[in-house]
Each structure stands twice: as C-alpha cells, then as structure tokens.
Image (cartoon, rainbow, N blue to C red; front, side, top):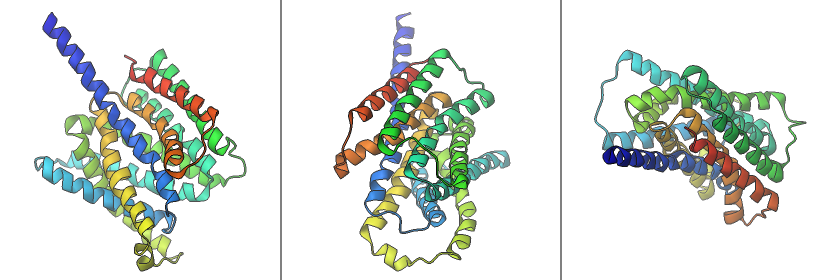
Length: 306
C-alpha cells in the first residue's frame, strides 16, 4: 500500500513538472512581442513564416538525429504527420497575414480563442472529460487575459479588416487542431519526433506561398541580413519560438490532456506585456496585475482538475 502511494505521488509530481513545458512555450511566444520591438518587420509576412518554419525544422531535425533512434514510419503514420504539417502551414500563413492586416488589439484578443477551440476539439475528437472545474478555470483564465489585453491595447475590434480577423480566427483554429491531432503521435513516439516531422513536412507547403508574395513586394535580402536586430529576431523566431516552443508544447501532451495544455496558451499575451515592462521599460498598471492574477488562478484551477 505504501509503495503504491509513493508511486502515485511521484507520478503527480512528474505531471506537474512537465506542465512547466507548455508554460515555457507560451513564455517564448510572448517574447516575440519584445523581439518585434527590437527590429522586426523588414520581411513580408508569408516569407517570414516560411523562414520561421525552415529554421525550426532544421533545428528540430538536428536534435532528433542526436537524441532519437532512426525510425521507419508506415504510410499511415507519414499521412498523420502530413495532416499536422497542413495545420502548421495553415496556422503560420494565416497568423502572419492576419497580424499584418489587423491591429495589436485584435490580434491579442483573438489569440484568446485558441485554448477555447482546443478544449472543444479535445472533448469532441479525443473524448477528453469536460468537468465543471476545467470550465471554471478556463473561464477565469479567459477573463484574466482579456483584462490584461484590454488594459494594454483596448478591447474594441471595431474598424479592423474583416478578412484579417477571419485569418486570425483560422490561425487559432489551426493551432488548436495541431495540438489535438498531434496527441496520438506524441503519445506513440515523442514530442520531439512529432514536432520535427510535422514541421519538416510543412516546409514545402510554405515554399509554395513565398514566390507568390515576393512577386508583389520588393525585398533586399542583403540589406535584411545586414541588420543585426532583424537577423536576431529571425533566429529567435525560428529556433526559440518555433523549434523549442513547439517541442515544449507537445511535451506537455505526453503527460496531460490537450484541454489542460491549452490553458497555458493564455499566458502568451500576459508574458508578452510583462517582458515589455522588464526589457523595454514600459509601464504596468494595477489592472494588468489584477488580470495576471486572475489568469494565473484560472491556469491553476485547470491544471489541478482531475
């Protein structure tokens, strides 16, 4: 009896420890706000999304080769990786285009829908449980994040480009689908391998979009590479907020439900504003603190749900 109790405690401890993985992923995504202020915006959106996926895929591939055995996947498994790759391409393209066509307020508010979409898909497709505690925690996290975003940008979405908002909604749905559909592969293989092969297969899908965009805009590749801030932003975007963050996001799925992992996405805009305060000297208001506390309580409630 004592041994079983000890094993149960160890299991719960490991689960809580790995919940830090999606939280760190959200922090890395939040860091993109600071990176953008340091010189981002010199590359058109679809081209930037392509570069991000290529750098992420290359980084992940190196890590897989160094740490995992070489596998031979079946045609069905490659098809499943391919489905994830489609969701990666959809998410990246619509997110970057949508961000370019909308305001910071609209983008931040629509980001809040990603965990909601994830929870709905997890319940309907994976038969995950939807308890009152999880619903209450999700609602708390939503309210807290909206308070933070509203304090930072305002909560109105009026006056924005309707097609830009639609693209961001599709991006939110796309990342939710990538999270939910990836769970079976993550559990069968690993977070690292699933993130790697889905990202690699997304590269040719993103490649198709680049010539179309570059045909209508002008860009000086040499000039871009000569700007250290832009180059640093691209590296951060590809290596840290793609390769590392996507791996960490899937790492959480190895141990907990997709609906539970999803709630950590709420931390992204909160961390983004907090980084702005620390690294850019931006002001923080009492309302931001209140919203952050409410968001953290919501995440805590969902994380402890059984």
